[in-house]
Image (cartoon, rainbow, N blue to C red; front, side, top):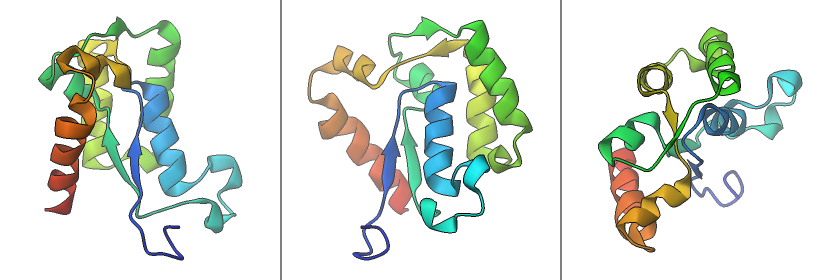
Length: 127
């Protein structure tokens, strides 16, 4: 749909190291299948949930596990995560040592994600 219909792709994952990695695999492809360029969407945009969202929106969260921290260490060494956004979010995860699911936004109401959060993120990305 992205290539054939020229539709944008926005990625909305849980706010944890695994969600970050899912977004990166969609954007750059799997490291194990890097030779298959048709399996990625380089123009896709990771819109969140970011570690900074956990802080900014005071989202209900859980502590990062040892496995989550191990994953952050792996991501930090991966050159695909060298960009500013990715490094900022890795550092924030390390600092706050928390993770949060998309559903955490329900603390603001059941439709907050679609009424407030996502439109704000889309507006930021279009500027």
